[in-house]
Length: 248
Length: 245
Image (cartoon, each protein chain N blue to C red):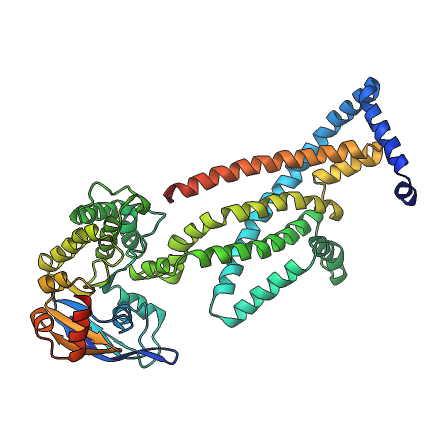
């Protein structure tokens, strides 16, 4: 490490070697073939773990987030406090630490969870906390008159919430929730550190055997990027649909 | 139809209604006037229990609410169904079309089958002159049209009394007429009991059975439109009428 810092020349030499890869057809073919053979296990990891983990966690997290937002907004003091403490703890500690506590820590209490379940719990708690703030803000952004109009036609709190306020709050919260969703998809790579065989762990395992770290990690990054791009496109579609009742 | 006794409402230390007594017979139209801050809107909102009074009683259609002790949410919801409310800013549901706005209460609150609720809603919209706008979203309608959807939405719940909170104040002048006409028809043809907060003196003259002047949380003067507008007894009523005319 000291050496690379000391000598910029060393960096230049490496760059030269790297550029040499492209002028060496044999090396080039070797890399392409590694990329191809590693693609299958990585995509498998994505389909079997990364994507299900993201979807399940997001749904659970959203439910938790709505409940937490409602608790924060309720007039019952104890619910407010529970919600505040929960959000504070989750936002105030690193996700990786939370995952380690659940997977490596809880066994000390006799609670042993498999990696996938641990990841689902950890990520759901995280999404729940962050998204609850988004949903709380979205609910607050709906004018008081909308609640009153609901009440005035005889609705209860729950009916007004479900039929009038949440559908409008959903529209407001789609862009920030999409951010949370995309972050979540990328954060699932942390699950590799609690032994979930998701995509990035597959990349690590392959790289550990053939030492092609650069290639495999770039390949993993590319797959994440493609998935996130697809999500962005879906986000746009949903926004268009929910915006149909707004003046353009 | 309505019988109010000694109604008080405070927000913290601020007493907004200081003992209101009022009786309204079935089919009568009452117009409330008064300077801003006089408590007339708060009074109207108390009738719908959007504000829960701090003391006194309200009886509507022989159902009595006492406010000395705290009232349950359930009794508020059921008492509220006796009145329909029309808001100054319409408060239509922006994510629902005109007909969906009108159907919402009957379907969700009264559990009326969707198809039947839709027919009733369409008929109501036709009655307020919007038969050709049923599938429009609020943002596609003018203010006057939106307010008429608001009236239809309140009527769909078949209230005993209709409450109007400055229903034309947010409208461009040329759109006021249509809304007032709908209200007039409701009063004259349907014999609907109505309590209206408004600054439309023409409407008050033409439609009201009684005009009530409120100031500082109390009823200062009441009488027929003729009495109030041409020969008010109270100096304050006179000053107020001079200011707005």
